[in-house]
Structure formats: C-alpha cells, structure tokens
Length: 352
Image (cartoon, rainbow, N blue to C red; front, side):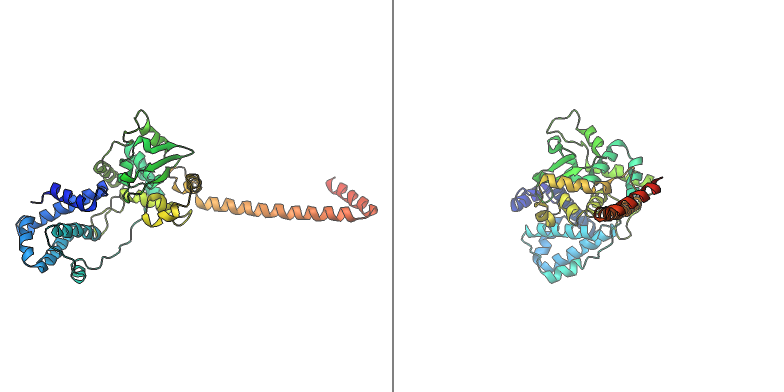
C-alpha cells in the first residue's frame, strides 16, 4: 500500500512548498489510482510491484502502458492519464527506477488527440443561473465575470477583495496555480452576489465557505435538470463544467484585446504583457469589455451595431450640412451688397 503521507513529504522535499493545493490533490489521487490498478491487475501492493520492476526496467514501461489502458477503460481523459503517469514515474524514481527513455515513453503514452471543447454560451449561463440555488448562482456569476480558477475562488478571503469602481480581487501568490500574484475584477452584475457573501465577515474569513466537490455536485444536478448534462464521447467529462465559466471569461475578454482575458485569468504565458498595465488601466479595459460578460438583460450585439451605423450616418449628415452652411456663409461674406440683399430676400421668402 502506498504511504501517501510519506510520498507527499518526499515530493515536497524535492519541489519545496510550491505546490498548489489542487496540484497536491491531483498527485495524491494519481497514486491512489495506481494503487487500485496494482491490486486489480497484478493482485499485489505497489511496493511489491516495485521489487519486480527493479529486476527489469522494461517491465516498468509495460506497467505504465497497462495503467494507461486501465484508466481508459474507466473513461478517464487522456490528458488526465498523462498527468497521472507523470506522478507514477516520480513514484518509481523515488524508489530508484528511472523511466526516462523518451522513445519508450512515446510508446506508452502515444500522441494525445486534441478534441474540440464546447463553449458555454450566454444563454447556457442564464439557464443555469435561473435554476441554481443562491450560492451556486453567485459562484457562477463571480467566476464567469472574473476568470478565477475554482480553487482561487473558493480560497478567496475577505481581505483579498477591495471595493473600487468595480470590486477588485487580489489572487494571492500562495492561492494561484502559477504562484504569481495578480488582480482581476468582478462585474457590476455579479457585484450584489459577491457583497452578500462579504457581509458580517472578518478579513481572514473565506468569502465562500464551500467545497469544490459541493460546487461540482450542485452544478451537475442543475445541468441534468435543464438538459445540459451531456458528456463528451471521448471521456467522462461533461460538456459544461466549472472550468467552462473561466473559459467563457477568457473568450469574452479576448474580444477586447487578444491576450487580455488570458492575462486576467492568470495564464503565465501572457503575464509579461499583463504587467505593462497599471491597476487603473486594467480596470478601464475591463469595464470596456464588461458588457460582453453580461448574462441577464443583455443588449443584442446586432442591435448595437445597427445603432452605431445609424449614428455614423447621422454624423456624416451633420458634417455635410455644416460644410454647406460654411460654403453659404463664405459666399455671403464675399458677395457685394446687392447680392447680399438678394440672398437675404430669398432666405426670408424660403422661411415664410
């Protein structure tokens, strides 16, 4: 049986204390899954299997491949299996078994297919919110308007939230996946829901006293209720999950400026671009794209474009009339007195 506590201690000695809580959970789950696999396929404890693999490292690659197939039968996504194999290899490595042959590892994992992800729509979000309880609705609105990861949102403390023109959220380095502090914002629409959970709490209290599993379960129940509970054909994952709300934010804010949604959401690749903005500039750009995050009382974008087109046409008409007036004034100013009298008489008759 794998001693998870010992494994965690050894792992953290190698990595320091940089692991986010969600990463630690993924690692522990991977080792538990491997333990179940050993019992089901080999009918032995992982430590006993280690002894067999020590005699023949090629057997280690074969074990990893069997583990992959075992997880596939359980409808685990290939990307998740790849991550679990990574943790199992680290487990082997700490017992003196180095499985680092790139060609053999390719044979184990293979090339991961890239499946298209379904995008959650404004209508989907409205339907979910209208059928969710108050807490789930609040979480959905805050996450979809801020781009927070679930772990970041549920780890949010009252002291991390500042009231400005919009609520500003500081994602502490220790609470961020990439261990990089950043700020993001919450929309005006989500503001009263956030405020409800802020009242009567102390600075170090959690804003949302809720677990990830509770949120996932509540969301699944709503999805099934409203007919949005479909799963992908290639995995056991649902088309809509808690991650979908973060993806929604990134997509909508990306319409303001390509990298902007990724930066506020904490994608490391875009952080250098993100750092060039002051907090005030970030807020200004956030407000610029805020309407795209609106779930309720949305203004149809087609209507907005039609209004903009009509305003543009009206502006052109105004400019043309101003030019005509300027031309007439110039003509009047340079004309002789008899011509001026004639023009005045004609204008008087036209007005009459």
